[in-house]
Every structure is written in structure tokens, then in C-alpha cells.
View 1 (spheres, helix red, strand yellow):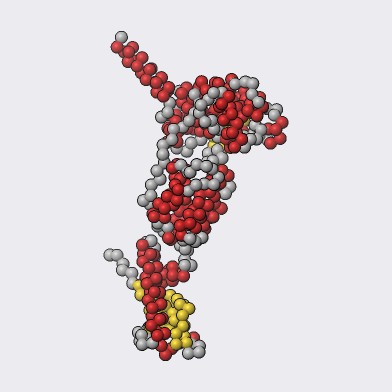
View 2 (cartoon, helix red, strand yellow):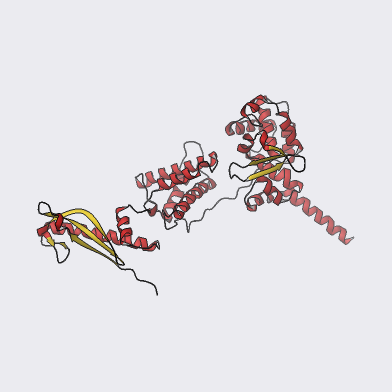
Length: 410
């Protein structure tokens, strides 16, 4: 049988603390036998207090004014009590009192959980990923400031409407660091990071109700751009090139044949080039984004690029395989390369990873399970998106099937 909670609030005058004819008023909170006293920081003349009714005398102006305040206190305490019940927590007189004073463990702010998450994640997540979390935090702070006209927003105030309104804010927001508004997927990534912070708040019991419970993140499906074998060949064979463009081309092509992301290529050192059990050269490293180990056998074309930079002074000075370049410069120079090679796609460094996944591996019959392992994916679902865009592979497989069917009828 379900236990029934008992809750009551009574007001007392502490006459032992009387001073100049006035005494302080306290609220006595009782829940299931537990009791807590709450100082209301209100005083009343002892002659205006009704001891029998535990309230101010309605026949006096001072008593009527105090009674109005006491009724508000009673209502707020009742709301605190009901909120704890809704959160399915064990309710006590002290927890109701803490809720009223906003000193309970659940009364933390959005800024606090964002800071706690970011402090815990620093050194665990890659610097680029942390930068994204800081950006999300800034958007949340700006949204609260513009929509609620205040700096602090309590976690206990979060609800579905807050998330919905925050999404609308992001859709209408014009960032100052780039010209275009946020895309749907960009908005969903901010909400995804926000959701992770909220989940953390639930796990550490700063929040007892998940406002994201009925909210669905809806990403747009985006086709992965990659170079065809013909475009990759044009890029590889293009010469002569300015030294800076030659360097960018070589690093990009190396990534096309290894599947490494930009940050992983730039941090690659000779310690990551190891002879495998097969006697051949392998790249053995960890993805900075996920810290997942990545072991990739080095194909001939990638190895020839490594040999080319073996004695590069800039690379040796940095302790890396390739000279250092910023991602911004890399992508800027890649656009120049695309124009020189008559490649119509907007060339970005991440296309090298997509090209490895498709043109270099899947198109040439490498099983998708192997490709997933080479990419350092934590889920096969992340790899399957590439398999959906390989028309040539589908065509080749169907041609083989058709040939078998024809042969069977002869």
C-alpha cells in the first residue's frame, strides 16, 4: 500500500526574542514527522499577534499586513513540497526549507553545469571539441540574457519550452563570426551539446527531471562529398605547383590514402610510424576527437609522400612528419588547388577522409567492417553513410550478378 505523505505549515511568535515590544515570526514546517524551523525575518508587535490562531490579529493593520505575507510563504512552501514529490525524491522538512531558501543541492544554474562539464572535459576532449562546447555555452548565456533579462537561470526552471525557444533563438540568430545563419545541423549540434550538459546534471543529481525527455534532435541528411578516382589522379599529377600549394597537395593526398583527420595528420610524428607484424609500415595513433586507437597500413602512394618529407627541416624542428599548417590556411589553399585542377567541388580537408572511405577503399572492394576499423569509428552506423553513395560499387556488384545469371542460363 502506498504511503501517504503529511505536510503542514504553522507560524509561531518567538516571544523569548522580544525586543522593544516586537518579536520575530518563524514558520514551522512538518513533513511525515520531521520538523524544520524557518526564520522569516519578519517581526510583529506582540499585542498584534493572535496566539490561539498563530497569525496576526485581523483587527489590526499590522496583523493584516503580516497575514498577507504569511499566506504567500505558505503557498511557496507548498509549491516546494509538491516539486520535490514530482521529482520522486524523499521529501523531508529540511528539503522543503532548502527549496524555499534556494540553498538545496538542486538549485544550481545553467552556468554552473556548463562550467562543471567543461572543467571535467578539459584534457579529455580535443581542443576543437572543447571550443564548440564553449560556443554553445555562450549561446545559452546570450539566450537567457535576451529572453529572460537576467544572467542566472536555475536548472530547476528548465522545461521543454525553454529548449524549444532556444532552438528558435538559434535559428533566428545571426553570428558575428561568419556571414551565414546556423544550419539545421549546426543548431542540432548545439542542442546535442546542451543535452549532454543536462544529462550530466541529472547524473550528479543537480537536476531530477530531464527536460529533453520528449525533445527529438532532427538532423538533416547530408551527402558526404568526396573526390572521384579521376579527380584524385588530377590532383596527384598536377605540376608544377608553388611550394605552399605543393605542401598542401601532398598532405591532402596523404590523408586520402590513410583516412586521417587534419588534426591527426598535423600531430603525426615518426614515433607513430611503426613496422607491423607483416613487416610493412603502419600508422599507429589515436584520434584526438575520440581518443579511439587507429592503426592504418600505409599504402604505397602515402609512403612515397612520407619519403619526400623525411628530411624536411620545418617538420624536424616541430617533431612532426609534416610542416605545421593551420586548418584555415589549409582549406584556403585547397580552394586554389581545386581551381588549378579544374575540380568543381568546394575542396576542404575533411574531403580527404571521405575520399579514403569511398574512392580508395569501398570502391575497391575493401569490406565496410575493415573501413570502419581504419577510420576509428565507434559505430558501424557512422561508416554506413559512405556505402550509400557509392554508385560505381553498386553498379559493379550488379554487373557481376548479371553476368552470373546470364552464365547460369547458358
